Image (cartoon, rainbow, N blue to C red; front, side, top):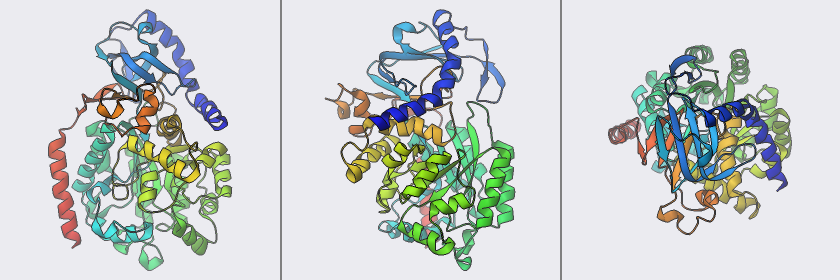
Length: 502
């Protein structure tokens, strides 16, 4: 309970500013709904557009994740353009809007936030040679396959991975793309995100230390460090949007301590901070990762991160399964975030991350599905459920509650990504929300607590997803992309990739 109260206070400060800014708007819109033709600002770019209005009403339960953690029966929300202006009981909201969604029989909640992924890996799920290996052996068996990736493969695999995420309730995702063979570029992933309509943190990853220099990856898949930094600067200058409600942000993301040099880590941090963008990498994923750091650098992974300037509110690390107590204290003191990836950690037998200790200490923790070759899925509700179950296996039946798992998957992810405009349903927040149909057989008998049922029961797909005020999934069907041809093309490309590897 003490941990839960501490987390509530931290999250209250995260959304409090937006709520305060939106209180006057909520009162005004409740009394006088704005006409549909009023101008608004869209997607953080300052571009005028018609302020289309959207009303959600009569949700059986609306989970706000606001500062008070309100759970509203017969709830709803009112949206103008791409932002929420009112949240409450249906009878407290305007009666009309340009589009009205009656969500009786549904639970509505903030869109889930995925803080770690390698979307290209959806082309290499369940590869036989990698099915029964730990991290280093798994990577070694797959590097040679990934060396044959093409720009089309990056774009199509990103579309497929994002479709999977969207249908599971995710509305914002990061992606860590760290190898660029055969002319591939981060632009290929960005094109897919724009096409499908996902809010996206595109991480310009990199590998520069190949096997001849003592690294893990083959020399054929590493890049020159000057080329890495130049291209990272290019994508930041071309794509990064630091505005509120931004649909696209760029992240600087050298892959890992065993695949890049100290110099590249330091120069990447300088570049990121010059432009005011976030930093991301892998850290302390398993015991071999820790042993490599001690042998190579004479430090623990956390000490190495601190030595390189890779701690702070603008940094988050994936996994941290083997983060020690000193590392946890360092991350808490500096506000350094963690992407918790329970399915991948189990698949690769990396261990059980001490998420409870991290959160009690004040470390920001979000949820990540990790790459589709080490999960081998990207279902965010399933990931939240797995986080709860794994925490209980490791640390007892009260180690994580269902509501804590959902908080990590929403507000936790938003905090890790450095955002205070997503992760909660409150006035002034982005209009990113999802709805699950409670009338499915998998929820039968659990409606006395539909919020907990989302996590305890079998994972459900969404009935509705709205991102940036736009309906992206309706009646369980993706609206922005015809999925059948994408999957068909994806499977052909996956076969080509496997054949090329021999």
